[in-house]
Image 1 (spheres, helix red, strand yellow):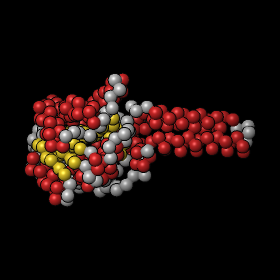
Image 2 (cartoon, rainbow, N blue to C red):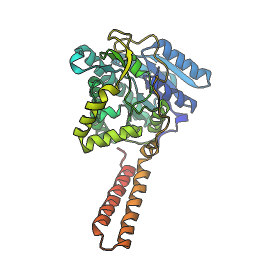
Image 3 (cartoon, helix red, strand yellow):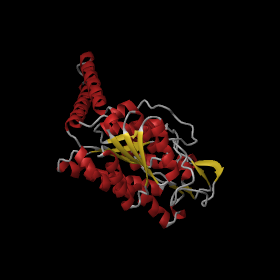
Image 4 (cartoon, rainbow, N blue to C red):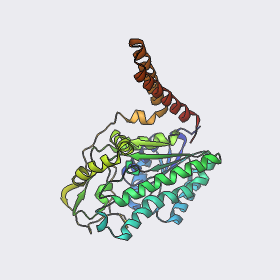
Length: 359
């Protein structure tokens, strides 16, 4: 059984802003000892100091996740300070906007080095310690792990890479009976400073595709992953709808992206490609937790996502009741009753597998 958050040592990369910062503050507020990592040393220490001033325990370790030696040093600092690591959160990320033909090869490579290799480095450094503690590896991907969009091809590629890597890693760990739990958190658009700091070739400031959800919603999903055994956890109903639509009809999503995703990711504010951005070096100020987008504070989908087994059992029961009701009202209506009955069995099987298989 995983330790409660209040008893955990939690390491979070990308913790100077956005989801990482919100998750660090929330974990510390609940009693966890947190180790914050990011490139911006000043903002990182300010974040750790604010946690300590509030009565929490926090350590700031400036780290560029693209450098494996620095990530290894981060893991050692955490263990030296607190004795173990219970949850490691791979949250560091950068973004790059522009049509593919306008992107430089070194820019694309840097996105992959931070977003994908940064998570590989984190897992390599953390897994030996998580094996000892029976802890959790929490990787922040995106709903764009399931479906790419135009103008963010490099970012989408990095998030797809994370998903494919974790699909294989998770099975390898289960085969050798590792106690480490692995969760891929896939946020929808979240109101963070990521978009303000991104390098852009659009000529204007980019923005997240609406609807945009609050950073607290994503932080809560990260903390839920730290104490549960979720395989994948989408944040926000819009992302769940996009992922489902991609499985049903990729060409329909192509059409949606063609007509809505270009204008939907642009603001009217000019921003040249050489404007300050954090692709290769940190900016002077990481922006705190929030960006400047109008946001949706809650998602009715989230309780379902975080209690998938229970939701599947409820849906199974409803399908079973529907099948029984149809047959009782009209004994000849065998086809719809059979479909609902089959749905009930499939959902019940999904719930039982989720409960029994720790993968």
